[in-house]
Image 1 (cartoon, rainbow, N blue to C red):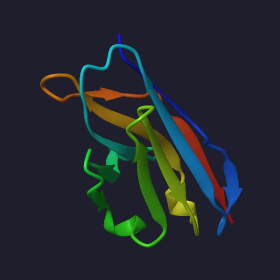
Image 2 (image 1 turned 120 degrees about the vertical axis):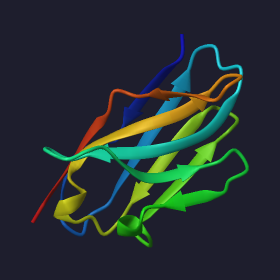
Image 3 (image 1 turned 90 degrees about the vertical axis):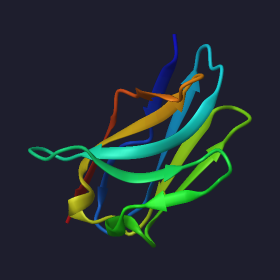
Length: 117
């Protein structure tokens, strides 16, 4: 059974920074693309950033220049460095990993990020 565990969520003031971490454990035959998604109250889950095994990254327009995604393939970890946080960044942030022979998507339980003015 594969498990994704996020950490690093917190309450911060606008302009602050946070670093989220995601650890993938269990029987990982193959780890494909990984990413961060978020869901704010009353809104649908949206993509924040993704990263391929080769390091290619993709960012949502609303975080470009402020967030940086990275991964450590050696220990199956994913990170999201968030800077210049704004109130609209308030959401539950979810780690996602495409795992196995068919790169099936698995989700973490989420970590809360709250940004206040």
